[in-house]
Length: 165
Image 1: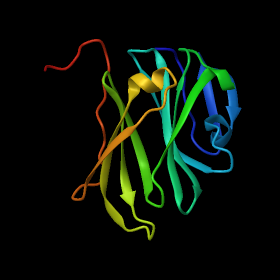
Image 2: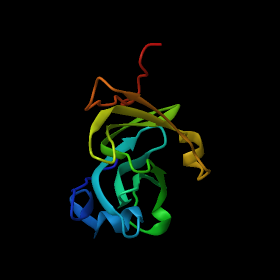
Image 3: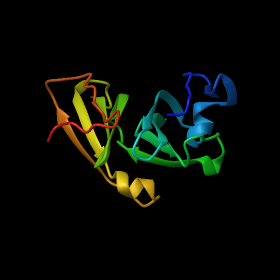
């Protein structure tokens, strides 16, 4: 895996072998316009040798989204061609504290779900069509809510040995 790092708000800093590659705001990097961008996470997809990121992008009280992106190479910069980007909408419901996982069949995220009045309604787990996202096609999400649990953390594939079937 390439040696890269990520420093959170208010700027993003990518490093390679201790050398700064670029610094910018999350909103600019994620290309989310005037949205408030926060809660970033960047992980490595060992199968495709790309970085994958997600975080909250709030456009307004009725337009909450998770911004997704992945690098087009193992050593990206911050240019437009270096990242493919998506946003998935949750309307007035707020997807707080998203956490990522990579599996061969899908990209996954979990988050705490909040109503428009900011009442917690449960932990949410979503799967996203990884194969379509990797080639820039329209992709869907499939989400399920667990009303009894919050703070769900997703496990992902790491290393070269697949888990037992």
